[in-house]
Image 1 (cartoon, rainbow, N blue to C red):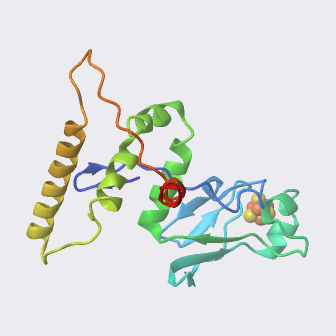
Image 2: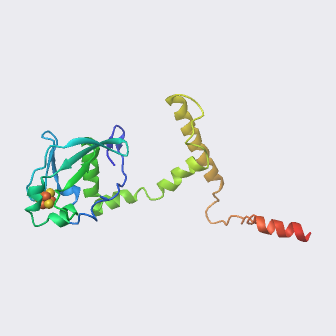
Image 3: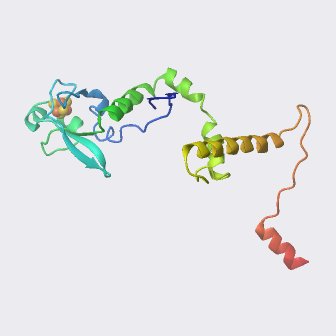
Length: 192
Ligand code: SF4
């Protein structure tokens, strides 16, 4: 999703959830001036200075556009999504995560980004096996160094389990009989 100390972390972000309610313009269409603490809309109107607020207990920025300016615009209903004459209200994340989110939203619909992300196909299932089947989410020791060793050993063990299921090219693995279901076990127990 962003550039971290170990290189780019690639991941999707959810589409702007308010875009459906504001079909005129999404957040990405507004230009922030982080120093002046304002946004400028596609019609060239500048908001009032943002105010800090909370969303789900996390730091957010509340940006209001002047009602009079919005009422004078022909896009008001499509842009604000309300019919009572209020100006557009936008909630932003703090600057660094908001900038990353906006950039990824712009990029993730491009063919180049989708081809890049396709490399990750299958990664999530591979990684989730270590978490769900081999307890990787729970550290058995304290400290980063020991936790790192646990991760390495878990990954190595997962690879060994997978390798044990491989067979030489050109050969057919012996088919394992499917274990009997609980219902079948009950039927067998009642008829023997
Ligand atoms: S409704 Fe307000 S914020 Fe939206 S485009 Fe018009 S002037 Fe800009």
